[in-house]
Amino acid sequence: MATYAIEKGLTALPRPWEHNPSKWAERIRVCLLASVAALIAAYMGLYQWGLPDNEWDPVFGERSQRVLDSAVSHAIRRWIGIPDAALGSIAYLGDVIFGLTGSTRRWQHRP
Image 1 (cartoon, rainbow, N blue to C red):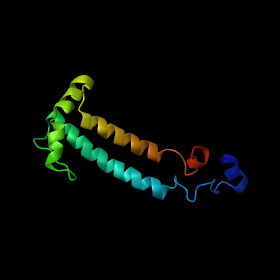
Image 2: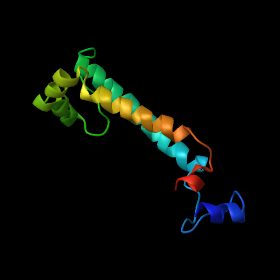
Image 3: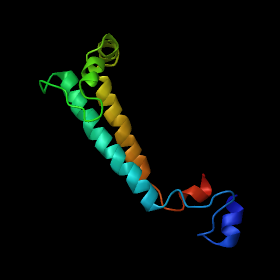
């Protein structure tokens, strides 16, 4: 696959691709969405640490509070030492970092 792209030039699409999945227009959308999700998850993590008095979630509303205050959530905090929502925020930040790294040609080497 990579040899086909090299033979046809750096902008060639290897088979079976019909578009460049690493172009910035594709990656920026994912990074922006992951950034918003990281902020929401960070706020939920602060709620689990007891800093804000109430939880705010624009997607699930009050149902999120039941999950954040559940026995499973408390058990994860006891085992790991940090709230599970903070772990989610870290994971979303990882998505942002990995989405921003690499060139627009990275898909040609590891599609």
